Amino acid sequence: MTDNAQTPPGEAQSKSLELPRGAMLAMRVSGGIRFTTQEMVIYPDGRVTAGAGDTAKAVYNRAQRSMADAYVVKLRKLLDQSGFFTSKPTESQPSPDGYAYEILSRIGAKHNRIEVFTGTMPGGIQSLVDYLMKWMPPADET
Image 1 (cartoon, rainbow, N blue to C red):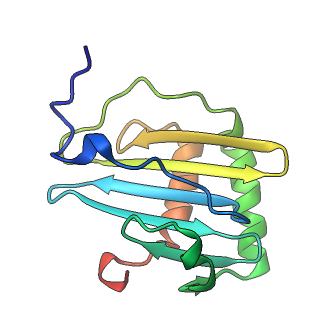
Image 2: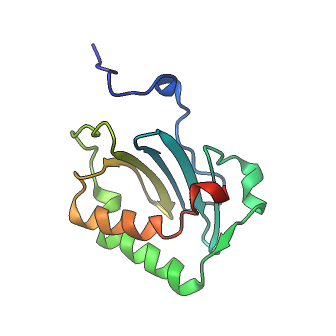
C-alpha cells in the first residue's frame, strides 16, 4: 500500500514528464507552500521553452529564452560531471513545503530520468539543478 499523504489533491494522476521530439532535456519543478508546477525544455540549439505543465510539441516554436552555445556546452558537461546519466532513483521523500525536481535527458545513446527533492540531493545533482533553475523563467512569465 502506498502512502499518498504528501501528494496534493489531483497530483496522483499527474502526467509523466515527456521529452519532446528533438529536445535534450526536460525538467519539472513542483511543490512549495502553495504547490506550483513549472516545466522547462531545452533543445540542443539553445532554445528554452517553459510553461506550467506544457511540454507539448507546440512549444517547440515558442522559445522564450535562448542559450548561447557556450551555455549548452556547459550544460552537457554538467550532465556528465554530476553523474546524472548514472544516477539511480532516490529513496528519500519530499518535505511538505519543499520542491521536487524531475529531470529527463537524452543525448545520443545516454539517457536517464531522475527525481530529487530539496535538501536531499547529492552535490553534483544539486549543482545541475542550480544551473537549470537559472534558465527557468519566474512563474509570472509563463
